View 1: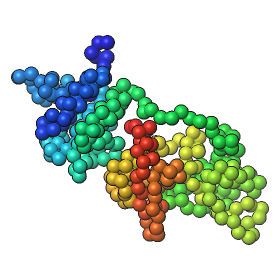
View 2: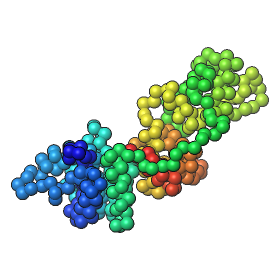
View 3: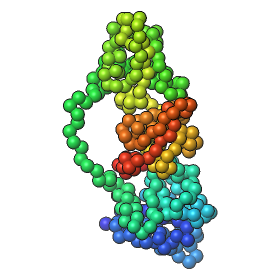
View 4: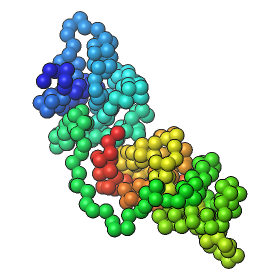
Length: 326
């Protein structure tokens, strides 16, 4: 293969960590990744700016940033990080943070990215393997899928139009409030959608039988089967193929999961401060991760606008991120 055919990885680091980074770069080259390292690429008289930013960062397929107590204080690394952040946003270039010192302040532009840990030589093989997998576009090995349950939920196409429209109305009302999941009166579907009692009951059956809503029932609601109804987080994921959202549900899951994994335990206000996600989307992500046993959630009163008190990472959180790399 021509050298240009190999994926190119720019290695951003402090020279105080040069020995470790050189070892990683050498192993990457042995495994088919063209690691760009200043020691190997710069010649006497070269322009540092041209070489590093024009030949290095701008022409790399991924950017590996080694985070240490020295590098987060380095002006050169800060400049490289700024250029990497621009390429990540504009060109979707993969940026891989590798933490090599404990208890350091992570730069804001990297907080929501899943990070690799390289605290000792024992971690080198795993870190190199993960970078190689990303560089060559290989997915993480995972078990093959077994047969699904006998009673799998019906697809959206299998729902009646009444159920789909009622679900979309619940989503619209909740997102306009941008808060937690509020109950909606049965009369709303009659007034807004113009549905008859039979049509509302038909739509309710679709939503309730697929466990997409919570409902309240009371005396005097006849001819309806419920009095008030509110959406569950699964409703958003169930209708994502039908309703056009202006945000990416899966990306929110990965962003929140990565932050939880990196912080180990965290509350809603901290998630909002570090991701700029609104409370409703944070609630969506945490509830969905919790329902799928990917995080552990503590709940108590007084946490509004969040529907949880604190969320904690588990082994399942890391495995989810391993299988859903940014």
